[in-house]
Each structure stands twice: as C-alpha cells, then as structure tokens.
Image (cartoon, rainbow, N blue to C red):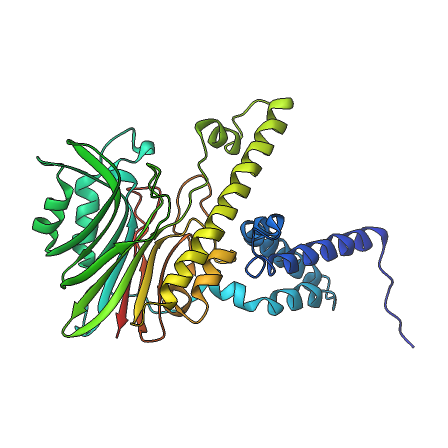
Length: 368
C-alpha cells in the first residue's frame, strides 16, 4: 500500500504563505461591495488585486510542478472571483477596427488629455498629436477630461475641435477661467445637443474633477452622455518621488507612506459620495444613457461597480488583454471606462496605447 510523502518544513511554509495569499485575494472581492465611507481600508484591496492575483498564479505553477492537488487552493480562489478577472482582462480575440462598417452605431471616445501638456515629454505640448488620434478614430461623441482652451488664437481648442474634427456641437464646463484661457471638462458631438447640464461636484472649487452631461439626438433617438472625471488622489511631487523609490529612507519614508495613505483614503471617500450622486442622477434620466470618462478608480472599486450595476461595460464585453488605461506611476491600472445602459449593444472597444498624456484614449461602438 503506497502512501504520499508528507510535506516537509519548506513545503509547509510555502503552503502557509499560499493560504495567506488566498485570504487577501478573497478580501479583494469585498472591495467593490463595501462603501469606503463605511470601511475605507477595504478600498485599498481593489488596488492590490493584480498583485495578489499574480502571487496566486505563481503558487499554482509551483504546486503543479510538484504535481500536488494543493494547486486547487489558488485555482478555486481565482474561480470564485472570476467576475473580477473578466473586469480586468479582456478575452475578446478580435481587435476592433477603426474603420467603421456599421454606420448605425454611435462611436464614443473618452480621453483625459492632461491639458495637452504631458510633463514627461519635457513640457512639449501634444496638441497636434492628440488631434491626429481623435481624427483617426473619428468619434461621433467625444468626452474630454482636463480640457484646455484659450479665448482666441491657435490655442482656441473649442474652435479647433469644431473646425478640424467636424464636431458641430459642444458642451464645455470650465473649472477655472479668465478673459484669456480656461480649463475644465468637455463633450463634443456630431449630432445636435438638445440639453446640457452638470452635477454639483466640486462646483465651488477650481479643480478639474467634474461631471457634465448632454442629451444628444441622433435621427430622432435621444440619449444622454455623461462625461465623468471623478476625484483625483492629488499626489504631489514628493509623493511621486517616494513611489518611484527616490525618497530618502528612515522617518521620511514612514511619513511619506502615511501621507500617501491619507490621500488615497480621502479620495476613496470623496469618490464614494460623487458616485452616489451620479448613480442617483442616472436613475432619473428616463432615457438611454452612456457614462464615459476618467473614474480614477480600478475595476474592483466600489465607485465603478456601484455605477456599472445593470449597465454594460464596453471593455468587459469587447476588450482585449490587460485593460490598462493609465500610463503614469501606476502603469497597471484601468481607470477609464465607457459604460452604457441596457438599451445599447456594445459592438467594439479599443484602448489606443499612445503616450501623449498620462492616460490612453479609449473608444467604443455602441448600437442603440
């Protein structure tokens, strides 16, 4: 009668570490359902999900090499949260074609353009490159976050977008403005805008985090588009230096870690309140609606999941590969989305991985 060889000390230690990794992976699944206002520490698990997913994959490979049934431990943990996998990784095998064959669809594009000025490009303005990308995609509706324009001249970007990109209608809400220039959030449309408005989010502050909407009429069918830029974390230069491992060691490290934690906590709670307001507004829309923009939150966040409940996620339905839309200090994050009410069918979706901002532009074809 054969018996299996018992686990040695090293294997037992690895098993304990595996159990800990599984426990934290399961905690990640609670991040989308627990409000940060109620218990903010769980919100951090939404950020940590890719890390614990990768760790559990390593454990699976290790136990499979050992030909051990213990690989089932992490396999089951991943399968329990398969919905989380599908929100972060797109399994669509066919790439979306920019050339559009179905003219009945509505092409929606969202792009945080960082005011046309990407710091890592040594201060060079990327106005022409960004316009070229938008022209290539040729969206019917364009949602721009961190939009910058001047009142006249070649930096009058509202006029440029209308003349160069063929948009006939626009809705620009300034976060701050004077007689010379302004920055804020904008919706451009090839179809008539019947009505526009904004939500009372940061309306008393001169910051770019806003929510605007426009009711658009295409061929007698009216639908609403929300352009969303939820609360940013507000990292300062010293925070980015610390994240890049350039900060000094010792007490400063402890201080910087706490400071980053406080900024993240504050942003989570702020976005929680903003998303509750936006969700309530969408429920009163009484028409098909699309929500696009920069959520500043991951697929396993409360904010994204609260709003996308009973909505269609363009990336989850038609995306490919790991859904990274942010290319800054945290390059593995998806924080930009195109969501649509059940009235729409998602036909195509694509992330354009060109670095002319700290965000990648995204677009989707939706059929109403």
